Amino acid sequence: QQQVKQSPQSLIVQKGGISIINCAYENTAFDYFPWYQQFPGKGPALLIAIRPDVSEKKEGRFTISFNKSAKQFSLHIMDSQPGDSATYFCAATIRGYQKVTFGTGTKLQVIP
Amino acid sequence: DAGVIQSPRHEVTEMGQEVTLRCKPISGHDYLFWYRQTMMRGLELLIYFNNNVPIDDSGMPEDRFSAKMPNASFSTLKIQPSEPRDSAVYFCASSLTGGIYGYTFGSGTRLTVV
Image (cartoon, rainbow over all chains, first blue to last red; front, side, top):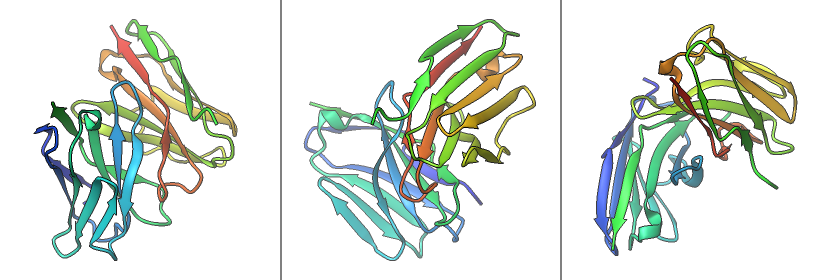
């Protein structure tokens, strides 16, 4: 029940295309959903996050879409660039609770 | 701020040896987390501290693993004795508010046990 399922495991997108990563969760107590971006040789870094009281959050080319009834959320990267090539992790947590549950990660490669 | 600092960056050791990984969190952060990352299992939380006190160590795989936080600016993760299956990247992360507004991760220690 604590798991966050993430897909796809890997993704190749042409420069300028849209990258879409999907996540699903079971625990309805989760109320905060961050996304992390990890470059090779580095630790994950917080990219963008959403709370379930909104259906979408946009920051630049990055958008989170949230479907509370389906218990699903996704990350869209518009106009994908080679510099976006990284591993992306979705995550979920409960506000006031310290543990964050991470998805298994999606390795994104944006090719010129 | 220099961020979360981990050392060493790479460690190669022989099976049975003791390994100590080190972490310096961001000054002022009151939560510290140790994670292990492998291809098979992704990011696993091993243990976390609040104000230097271990709060949850349920993710520590077995008694060979131990972690300490003697003060607010230093933590260690020790594996004794090490085994090849311990090979992974170990991350330390710190946070001011726990999981809510994001962790700051260090660059990790890549451990190889041969």
